[in-house]
Image (cartoon, rainbow, N blue to C red; front, side, top):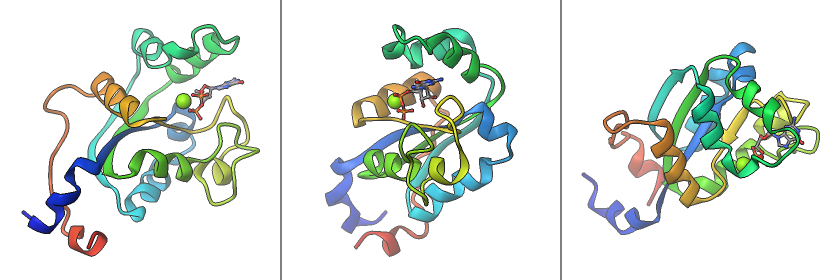
Length: 160
Ligand code: GDP
Ligand code: MG
């Protein structure tokens, strides 16, 4: 227990990150996890999972009216995904920066999509777009008891 970290506890956010089926099929799981791990965020949930249609539809319900929605649901359910929850101060916006723009051709070099993908329909990774959605998506993809609360040994070397 690190008393000096308590002050920032209310600023700690949760984000739901997912390696999509193309990322898994292309052998990019380790590479993608590594980017969040090296940045200094805390992994609190991790599993390989075959997503079913109902879950994919609930996850992407805001996009239901889009023309690409049916192909998006097919894509996300086409093979296993790697589901993750990462925690930290500012993790939601920072993870979106690490991931890069939705269209990989517009994503900056150095970002996951900028380095590892070429097409919007195969953009290898998902990240929550707000702290509220971080909580919503975490609750959607992980059951009670699947998350792990822990204090990384490096904590005092990441936050003063
Ligand atoms: P994100 O938050 O950057 O992932 O982007 P959105 O929330 O706007 O869209 C969710 C996902 O839908 C994207 O990551 C893509 O996989 C897919 N998507 C979005 N726009 C398009 C599109 O124009 N065409 C296709 N094929 N897929 C799209
Ligand atoms: Mg989105």
